Length: 160
Image (cartoon, rainbow, N blue to C red):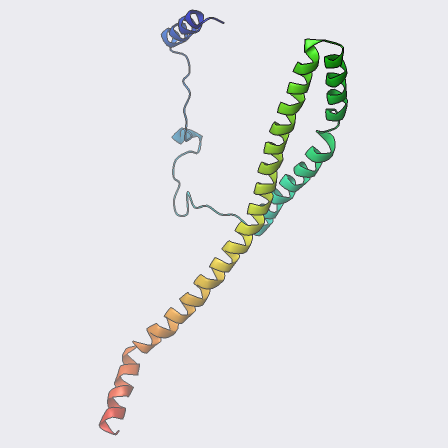
């Protein structure tokens, strides 16, 4: 497709004023608006994180075993064609190298996701426990400012 043709198609689509794309949200009538307390709060459980991490780990393993199957054959065919003087041999090897690099990148992403889900679950669990401990100590501190506590302290100071 030529650039001029692309520009012409864009202009034609703009003139028709058809349904427009909306990003970053849903229209309010489709449930995209806020609907009371708690709307928009992010909630995730350890089970959710573990499921995502497990899927990423399984995909990583499948990629290692299944996505590399054709690579040795392709490399051998590319080498064979290249030694016979065919330019296709070099191209086939180039495709094999690119495939290997892209596969490694995808596998790295899967490993990162899997590891991050494990890390996130543990970190958030630790954060929740930390907040819970601090909240309970605040409650104890609040009791120290109770009026009856102050009255008792005054009486003790006066010797009553």
